[in-house]
Length: 354
Image (cartoon, rainbow, N blue to C red):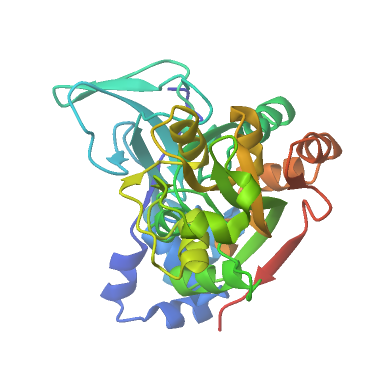
């Protein structure tokens, strides 16, 4: 690992509690926000030079008394490895270095950063956790974003395929940098904002990626009857997990009457199950249906957005991601995809929690 790939530990909580201060009192003494102090203390945020100096001044100590470089191996698993040996990726999230067991990714086979075997870590020399951004999302076209991110910036994008609610829960737990979600409904277009506020409990920014068409993915020849006929028919359904945007659409359409016996891990998995004949119907986005040669009945056009915690907005990897999403080249590629609309791509809304 290069000398730039460091892990910072801090002693802020111990020193604060030794003095009998609350986080709010420390924040006032240092001229910082309480949420900022909390994030730095918990290791979710690497402080700026100015913040580190003001904290040291508040305690009457040196910066080195508060912060230290941890050992290279001071990393923890984001979740337990499924087997031994296990390939892993490394990434810095806040001031924590996390290890992610390698899994199937919409980006294909992403080079791993090392191998864990019998309790020992063997890193590859090119592992760069501070240059890695981790996103949990279900966008089947996320490969375009990863490609532009690698082309336009010095950073790498890792993508974990997760449904909207699961992605948000990982974000709230500090296990990923960014979460993708599409949880609006036919009667409430504020669904993304409400879910993010409920799960995160802190300020955040929603960055619009696209407005895509979501609807019924069907075996060829089934679309002629219309949505109502499909819902009344005795078909083999493939579903998505509860909490995903696609499952929300199916539950709304069927009023909870359709409970798919089998679950696909992502939008493309739904389409592939139908194309192979394993299932006849499911909910997905137009893009994968077109690519797999399926029939498609649009149900709604909805906002797909990225949720970014407010405390992470100054992270250079996050700033670079926002610039890429707003770039003309990325917008142009998105607009050329079936069912994707780039009219609002790059628009953002910041929500401050009180």
